[in-house]
Length: 153
Image (cartoon, rainbow, N blue to C red; front, side):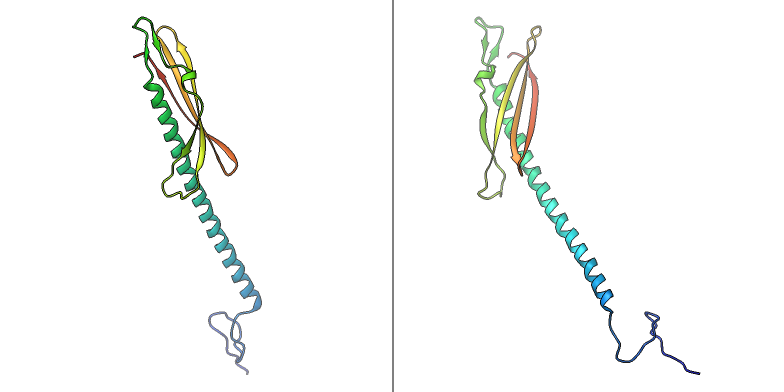
């Protein structure tokens, strides 16, 4: 009766001089490692890109809100004679602004603020104000919009 020694971990017969992994096991482990590292790198790039886009969007909204505040400061008085109305679209032409992002280095991103003023109603007098801040990110046009309705002073 011949008794052979078996390896308890793998259940394979143990022969002296044959310790280690097979080529298939090495290739499969390297493939799994490559896929895992690739997923980590892809996730990192996606999160960095998303964070950058989010910061730019926040800056664009701030610049549009700034322009909206300028329109709120315009004088519009219907109780005086003659009526004073500085809340006109011609007083707020399209402007090119810089999106300020702290820590962004020397790369400047420019955006265009487009102000639209329209009449909502005559009685009571109301005007709608819409500011679109249009900018590009990785070749794609993006627009951040703020809108409000204003009554006379």
